[in-house]
Amino acid sequence: MNTLPVNFIKIRWLFCCLVFFICSCMHKNTSFQSRIYSKDSAEYKKEIAAAFNRIDSLKKWIQSGDVITRTGNDFTSQSLRTLNKRDSTFSHCGIASIEQDTVFVYHALGGEWNPDAALKKEFFISFANPYDNNMLGVYRPNLKTDIRYNLIKTIQKYYGSKLRFDMNFDLASNDKMYCAEFVYKSFLNASDSTIKFHHSFIQTFEFVGIDDIFMDSIFKKIAIIKFRF
Image 1: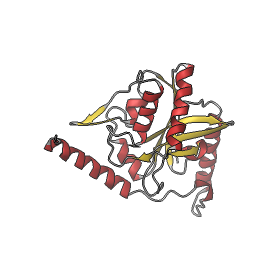
Image 2: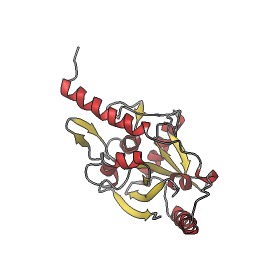
Image 3: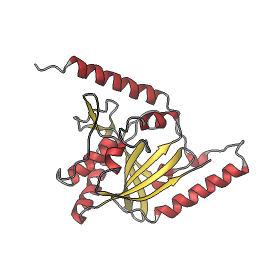
Image 4: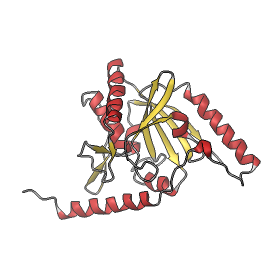
């Protein structure tokens, strides 16, 4: 029976410990629509309202197949950004799908804020909400019509199968996926493996970072919104 090298096991163990530590520090994510901040200043409320207006304005430009990125304002998100090897701007990503004139974002999420760890289908405005995020990005892939169609069918199939979040960040497995892996493999499967993104490494540990996706040449930056409070 083949066994994994000791160094590889050690690296994966350390990596998984980092992920576990990050996720254990996450707070519960209550609905932003129900939040009440008694100490909010008038200026803060004004900035929040302006941010929602910018998000709403951007929504009409989004197309199915766009990759939506965000940067959370919590400790976990800031920690996860460090896993990006080339560009640490964003901490999370998903794929947009317009269904009956409504913009949804499909994304892989785990932890306390998503107890069943199943792939999420979330309203765009909820995914982007400025209470929890500092930044939002929209990147459009240059895809043939048939591949774009396959991409949406692929993410819907993953959602229907209740694809679970991969706490091991194991790129080799397909039954569970982390956020960037879900995006990567959705494009890979939809294109019959003709679209392949760059892979990153921490020594011998191989993974796909969020920057490996949005920095790929098939993407055009549509917009980046920064929320400043």
